[in-house]
Length: 373
Image 1 (cartoon, rainbow, N blue to C red):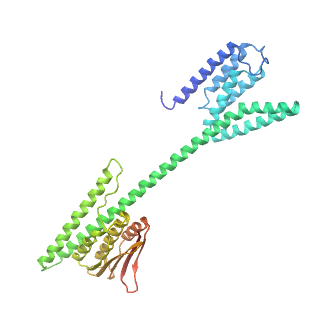
Image 2 (image 1 turned 120 degrees about the horizontal axis):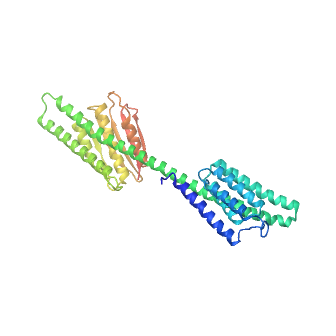
């Protein structure tokens, strides 16, 4: 039996069970709800009403409207002959299940119908008889009609709330995946653009030297090798994180304390770099990595857009913040795509810092980032 037919099969089994229990109740003479009223009704009519009600009960999930119409009709006939317990049980079950699994329109219709029926019976009994009896009549109708629909409404609301929570959790999961992809894209840009751009610029500098100093060539090639090794190391660590079966913390491959290597690499590429450092020990990991990447990207941009320019890197650690400033002469080189600036700004903002980049009053290009400590 397929998953689609399983609910229909359960409904058929439930209807058969109600029919069997109902026949037993009839046989034991415990079937009449209204006492002796309708006691002279032929047994065949009772069984026929029960059978029709159980036949409609088989459609309580697949065709709720059909089930309601058939079971309600059988209940009205049975009520006219003297309401019996087996038919009443089938009616309450169908009322509950159709309220729970039916469409929103059907559910609203049932809520309005049982409310009108309860008030109507109460008012009719109060007008036609003793007003005190109307209270008990209304209470009986409430327990038979309103309680199943009310209970189904509560279950339905809890189910819909659980579905909404599941959808929200799925949206949060997708957002987290997208955020992780963006982070990995940013890291890949920093690694590839930083190290490989420096390698390309330094290699071009060596190739353009006609009669270069062997020591200078050796220094440049050493820097090229160091950039290549560090780039491969960082990319392998990122791939290991992606391949891990269990979530792991991102390995910290770079620290601001290693910024001297970036300065040496930039100097080997032709920049005149002045470096003024500060105590960068025991920085928060997020700030440490973000500050390093910003210095790396700023020096890479200087190499690409202002080759040979005078450049300064300043790290200033204050009481509650770390300030990073990279300044270089603007040579009017070709404009970039802006991806590097976006990446630097994102890194600063992720750890609660600020970022600015642009020309100052002297025409130099200044990158400035401040991080809270």
